[in-house]
Image (cartoon, rainbow, N blue to C red):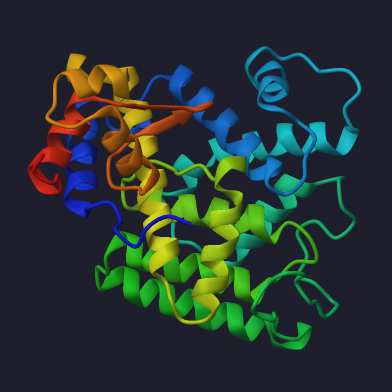
Length: 305
């Protein structure tokens, strides 16, 4: 699991400011949103057991081709989730309601599961989870309370990540659907970020264990791991978008190259990336960061070498 030493929010704030200086989120080129939505869709489905690989997702969503030998359900979930994800920008202009939650579920799982867009009518136990969802007759009441509390804290201007952690865990705890709660919860999480003018985050297969462990920690009252994970994921999203629309300082570079222009060794930088302190993206086994991210780390967090 990520270290309790989490990303300094001032670093995230400065990266966000640089991104929004270049482009507002709703004016980013469509090519960026197409890749962003494809990545998010692949990741959120993959951690739930989808057989669609990243190459398959690229073929389906970026090339308009259907890979052979894949379950129809997995392909349909990929296509439908991507459409719903792309619609979050427009949805971010309106308040989140219970109708929003039902619509998201209905649109993602239409013709895939029989109760798409319907609250569960059975009681559930979640294998491996350290929390139990409420009984079916309590779902609506708990969702009403969840939304009322969310809107109250949102209006009061609670920190975007603190509120995101609470919002996401509480939705997953309530588990209002028979199937698809994780995917709908992550869509709602990103709707929250977009409403606050932050880009979406992507929970990918490499994050699955940390993600599930952090939800279990939240169930025991410890929200630190989930907040640390969300900040690390947000840093990756910001770097990815800045690489596409930013200046030369935002170009993604290897840690080997970053070490040549900093007082830190490549191994030290890799450790800081793994611990979630230095903004970075991981591609295969390789970490990449940017000169801007490294400068912000040195300014706000970096140890003397």
